[in-house]
Length: 369
Image (cartoon, rainbow, N blue to C red; front, side, top):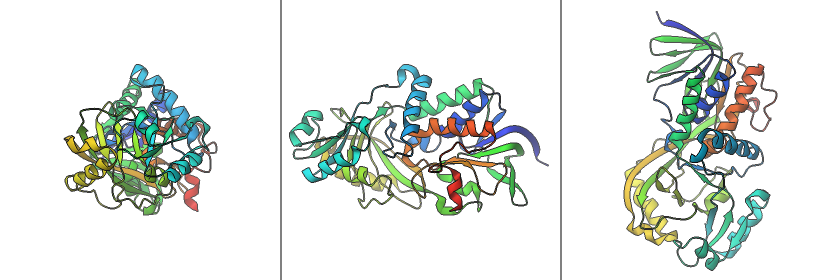
């Protein structure tokens, strides 16, 4: 017989969204248990590039602004309040100007095309002849520290974290009533799935498998003689954001975070990629943009599965057809950038008992379509 454990809310997943939701609920006096088979920040929340970056999407731009404020409150002096600026790199003037026009839809980004001389003045590491579009965004952080900070705040408010056991949803006919975790069975009025790329596997037939799928990236941690001044992102990759259609085999990024200086990343569906085989391709492409990468010392390689939603926007709220089951997942590569505000929004909806305040553009209601 399993031990029965009762809580007000069970959260499956101890990434940035799960930990932050636990904090926002616990500080309202809600009894919360966070369950994760691996550990805190074991997935994308601990293995991403560590850049809080504008989502470039009107539906989630407000979540980004709020997340910046929340991270500043939680991390204090460890969070850079002012963006360091991001450069989107291209090989021609027309592409740079097209990026400027595209991102001008968000005035706060102050998008501006740079000719090759201006681009190298902004970032001396660049290869000659590259054009760029500069954006006023980018707050480098350590993703593990941000996630852990929310977990510690949640624990201080009384939330319980239980880690390291296999889990499965407990169903009564077609309704989810709890979670089996190791030798225990957790029951609650609300069960919230924040399992990132594993969310549809956890839901196991309750939603279509394609609702959230893993989009794999490989990060190569390197040491360079001179570090970049700004995050560098291949413009074609940036332009494809939101469409999920990236034709570049190994799009270039170079991000300098407090955790690592990282070259990446691939955009691969399916099974976890072999980092050792991808690293040379990533470094070779990086040399086209930053020649000094040819002298880089490789410090480590890791793979990260981003939880890509079917329409590239997070899925928040009550799962259609379920009385007690909720979801907060599908943030793609923007978990650090919009996750804390998503968590606050979902926690507020759970306390209210309904998700009517969550916009249709990011609500779980669109799963019925």
